[in-house]
Length: 235
Ligand code: CA
Image (cartoon, rainbow, N blue to C red; front, side, top):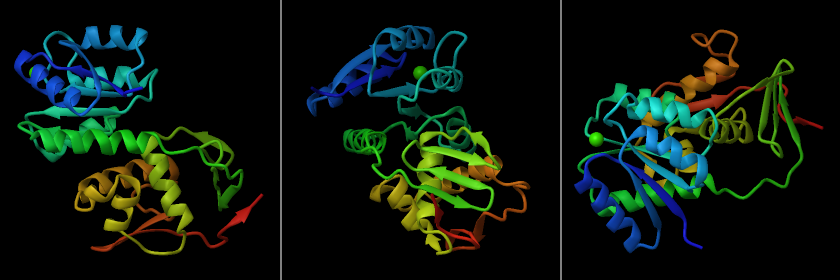
């Protein structure tokens, strides 16, 4: 069964082109032209991925649609935008987007990003039931759940994937390139902005004082390390 992609785009020409490109490589494509229609469609259909234009007509722009989708769905979202400012990228991630594609993009770029995001969302379930502990931080790899001092912390899929890589390599330096390749995929090795944004989100959720991190420390110009004095205690 082919994977299904919902395209939310008001420019008919772009929507048609994106549809043609994706159908040509075997995806099933549905198209809607505004945010309200996207939310309605999502409630009945279950696409595997959403391509969401940032500038949409009506009350709901792409950020708002993204936030509303994330209230009830983990379906991966790639934002389409004519802008390329770092601020927009960060705003998109904060709203819950998984990736970004700046217009104009080539057919090759579109297909590569779609494949990478689908691949990340379809990781096989972990079979390990081990609980990993480090100070106040507890990760249950089987349930993908995280607690700090006994309180559950809600992480997005990407936040969890990054934390998991850092934890599995605790007390070892993970370079920017290593982390990007492991969490996002090899074609993301140079997207250090993505990594910085997600380290910031994780610190906000995990650290007692996010501006003076003690769990995820920065190695300037190199990467990050999850510091764990009592590493690996598992139950
Ligand atoms: Ca638009």
